[in-house]
Image (tube, rainbow, N blue to C red; front, side, top):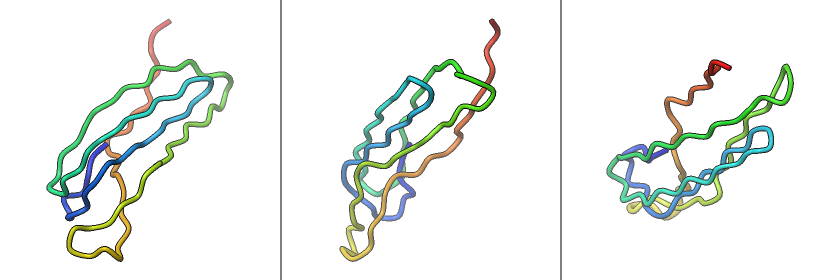
Length: 83
């Protein structure tokens, strides 16, 4: 999780929910790019298991307080692990 290097600043929090697991990842943006990696291991509960991301905080740009912005998610991967 990170920011888009677009002058958005402030605290960010993304929550991930899947199966019975959840993860909260926080990031303090200064609007100049950057990221924080996180990992959530889970066991699928069926043939289809929903993975949901939720952004808890929104904030504004340093140069435009009327523009709302939030976190960027990139390189989200779901992989099957060996038994």
